[in-house]
Length: 596
Image 1 (cartoon, rainbow, N blue to C red):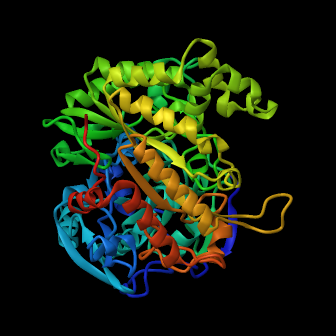
Image 2 (image 1 turned 120 degrees about the vertical axis):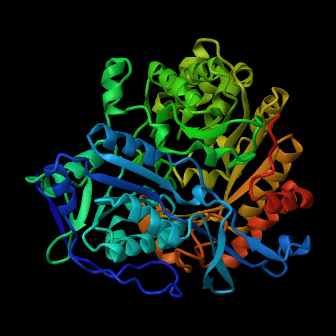
């Protein structure tokens, strides 16, 4: 396999905040052989793999002066705690187990959820670390004695914590091979290798790549050069990527039998997690409806191919693929055996095929699992389904032929309506959905390669009412502060104006009046791996630690600065939800949405 040498490792353009202590181990050639793993193999033992979600941090600082938050008497702005079942790690852990490795998964944020400590001073505020502390992590590492440690970093704002964990592992044993992965590492793999002691980065989908990598590190004749979809530092500390593109799993339920798909995508082994850590009254989308058992984030499909240019999913997670209803049936049965009593569906685009989604819902009802749709239901598909055949006939020929709408149009031909779809979701036990409204502005949507149907407000109001009439609560997601690359015909970038942002704020307020349960505003943030990533870096004014969370502005431009956007976000939060709901959110630490 030909590798791609990319030259000397460069100093990263962005990193964690300068107030972080310098790392002890950086800039060395990657460890590309696990000597201890090879020794275990030779002794007839299983090499040991330890997989981590690192401890997380969240920012606390004084509320901006003159902001809506300060006006209702909340003196501190706090980024919310956000964590969930580490389904990505469970996927690769299960694959590693099947390949003959001893595996342990440590979900540091949840395993130490109530442990908080003041960690780092950042500008006006400070970072609070939550999760396992480093002495606990050291003990876990000492007790397990891993040969290879994997670190997940899905969120750019948590990169500082991932690199500290890698440094700690190298301090305990320089010969331990440290592998990084997840959305951030995949999208910004060059900086990840330049800015940490991680030896190897697994880029994008890792289910097939990770076991291949483990074998190359622990087999006597292994070579990482033969592993697709990874990057590392060679003997001269030059960055090497083995393949330009990642190979995504080709999952085709209509052409592959169940066993073929299980070989490719085994059921995630929830026995690797202690589910007692997931018994909380609240999950990441609000309050639970069950007072017993654990909750879990799961998936029935993976990937998305809508290609919104602010979203990393099509590149990092790959195209939309159904895993098959027979696969999902087994998955749910296994979850119930592990004490799970309700679930959050994390699919990137569940409504890509509405008829398939309804079959998924039937299986959730079969296993008596109340559920939340958390990955984001596509509003534009619901609009098409709700508006009906006349609307489709008036769509452009390109839209009518687009694969984005193909399955929705087919479902409509078979008699499905938005009302019927939503009613069926409610009957299956769905009690909360995340509706990806995103913007009231057609320009912001079209310049992001997003369907402009999201801005058809009368249709959105009616859809929200359909959900609420069916007993499903709606959390609406809104995005503020688009900065998009120049279009084909214009040499100027598209920058959303403050007046356009006001339009989206008004949209959120009106939707709350129409019955939406909660309006959740996000600040547009450069996300590694997106088409916007390289372009938006010129506008960045914050380091990874004190921006990059969608709750803190990362960029400034000629039309507004970061503080303007932060105030706009807080204005939407308070105006749409009201002071009481915002205070409830701050006290709970999660969205103030209660199960029906």
